[in-house]
Length: 537
Image 1 (cartoon, rainbow, N blue to C red):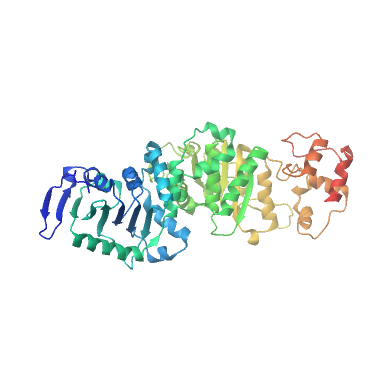
Image 2: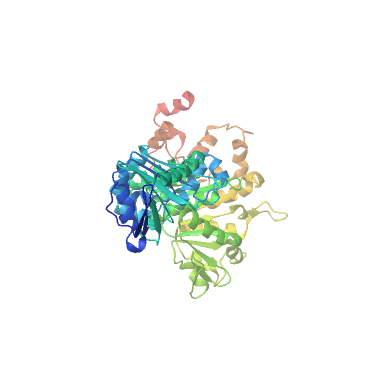
């Protein structure tokens, strides 16, 4: 074992071995002790209260030559966490494994992270976590390093982190006596046997950091589909070892597909309560901002404005501002007031994404559907947006006054129908429509159709008249004439997608990619193959 390091003091044992004392006051212990002792070692067993991935980066070169590295810690996990499914355990451990500056550190030392990933993947480094029932809190920190000249044990205050070894004030006592080594080794083996292996999340994260590549936003314009994985990879939800649920990712994909196909997105998200609609909408808003579509306006009930702001920051790392209805000012993510000149400032959000209460909209529209003078609604109408999001959209609806069959929209429905003409994308969110009337749903579809005829078509489209099409959708009635079927199909005409028949129809009618309806009739179809394809299918 190397003896190049200099302890503060040493005491020799009569029976053999010695006790050496080290202090960080006399030099960085990562250099004057750990790296030196690990150089040339064959095994390294470590009891650590806490551990972080940075320790591997700190002495990665020394660890490369070690045959076996075992680390045991409890990482402040409950027994329920340890006994839970692998994915949950990984997520819990993951939150404690990485450090705040790991992204910057990995960017500077990408080569070392690549070596570390190879080391972890090889199986020569193992990590186990001990439940609190075994060790309520692992204050004991010790290790055994075995080399060609024998084994040494050390005990001290140091956690297995870069900060502890390189920066903190710490003490280390090294014992080379056989009794001391055996005692520490026995303590380690007892904890190791009771620990649970949790390396998967670590290996994946280190590998991701090793291959992480920063790109300029200009690349996204050429490949919008690449934005989603690139943007979400660094969000807290993914950094914590979790991810968007499959249905949330599907919604984001749907948003991008609409954006690509139609040039704008008009989507109604109707899901059960508690399945994460907020993240589905917020992730889409994040991508819209990164794709430089324009500012985002999120409309939610007043009781949820702060909740949305917190969740977007905590889960997606999105700093957004919320409008304070009473004080007439924006509040930043830290709760600080951004002073301004009153209601007019609602149109000057200091962030790319602003959250505004729907209550302001309801009270800011008069009975004719016009914004009241000086209201926030009036100032919002003057702006153009990349995206408008409405949560709890079922509150935007029409009603039929007594003695009338004509539906009259409420103020919120008037607002979103009008603001739809001033935004590129509009996303509406509502609970599963089992408690919502068919007419209420059609009210929302009508709002989405504003300035986006691909939703329900032109004013002459049968899709604009729910009483006619709902029986068809519910299977209560069949299409009985070619004329009716043609109107249903061509106003609006669906995008081609993978449908050869639609491609043939669009080609025969000479429709451009952005055209979604036609005044032509079936007789204008000159290709006889088109007439046969529906029969073949």
